[in-house]
Length: 420
Image 1: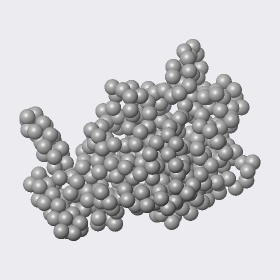
Image 2 (image 1 turned 90 degrees about the vertical axis):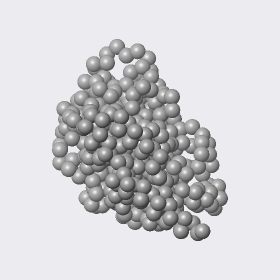
Image 3 (image 1 turned 180 degrees about the vertical axis):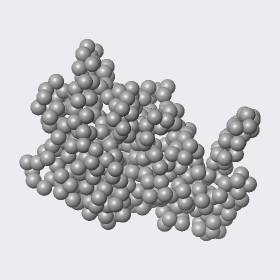
Image 4 (image 1 turned 120 degrees about the vertical axis):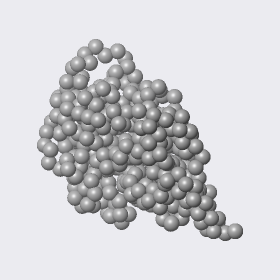
């Protein structure tokens, strides 16, 4: 039997199984396909960027020395082009300010404009994707150690305030040019390695700086801003200015988005438990889908229980229009393009699984107080034929099904990556 015929027969069987559970498979595929997932550019070059940083600072570290790191914008774009062919669904590009292709060597982050990202704008048009944007508050000589917007030095704060303002303007320009919203995510590594005494002072300076950046609301309809919290980082182990509590309080009081990163919480905390709680008081959130391993870290997204629970919470509660989703991890120990493919395919699989689940029957059982039936349905959902639907979904979108995408990456490694 040919592979195409095998996929078709598997889908026909799965369609019958899901129909018996009250699930319309074609509708689930359509809904899962329409949710945008933003691919993060920084996986492809180990977060180095192109604006001259040279080395990572600010509590960020990328481990591994797998060959083939993208060294130029052209190489990174080529890698992303291939990655985009390896997973289905609506796509976006998540871009950091440090990936500027500067129009003049003397330009710095406080003076960037959309012109410094013109090649990325052309790339987005070519690929038919929107662009999300991030100011880069790390890997720069104007950092005061690990401090930026909360630095006691006024000149340091001023530089980074201006960078934040320019980033908002750049994101708005991307949104206008591409006709898609551009989410602007603010993450600062500010904190101290050892015990901090004047925690109030640091947070008051951070608040004043952010307030100045967000003072003008113009453009937020097409370039909404999010604030991301951090648990800790290398060099800021004892005190982080923008903690979870600070981030949520600021986002709610200033009416901006809160960014929940799956790798930025204590080991016993999970983002899936926070989604409906936060959305009860904040209009929209940004999810950074990542995978923590033992500590505050960003590993390639796996199709684990927490990823599935995150997507279940978003889909089953009808929040797809209030949640933006981007991936955030960086692994230099294995093929970087494969990292993108594995992570993005898993995220889309979890979305598809959430739409395919018999969640209406689950809610009915819960509303009826039938907890036995609820648990039985919830567990039986785990063995429903998701894989058969996934492979059919991939095939109908011109994307390799499971088992067929890795050879494409291997060939690319031999012909392109190994020559770098």
